[in-house]
Image (cartoon, rainbow, N blue to C red):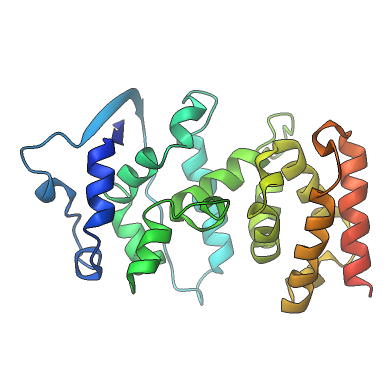
Length: 244
């Protein structure tokens, strides 16, 4: 079992100001040494059993399947049912985890090849892309929003869809409508149930999906629509793209 922490504001700011590729390629975390003798974290007074996330060669197991399994493991330990959401959307929370427990995982899954990549994967770079690019949040957010406790057979059924359609689904996640769990869920159901939706994985169709999502996002009072209406709207857009 492990205590959960937030970085202090000063520590987070210092880490961002002192990024160097060399430090992030070190096999062991540097955070304890950098802040030796200084306060750099504060407890959120929650204790959990954090899972070990794994990385295999993609020849052994497809990357999206690895991400899907890791997301479920992470979400079972960290979720809004017992940790307040204000911590789970806080950069200081996730930055602490990327610089400690999940240091080795990030180095294997998202090697620190540039300062830009470090900003995206170890920190919140900003905007809606946080939920599709920050290494741990991209796992957790998909699982958090797709988890269905009413699905007694498999509450993570839609989570698998979110990772199977990872590239096209980024078109949804990187827009503000993805913050609505209802919209998120309905989009996944449409992807799962619309015939030929696998064709969305092609580059050209992903671009078309992005334009379609902009159309959907422009609908007034989208959050007030019934789930059946939202699913129908997404399904119609998907069908139009894959059958054109």
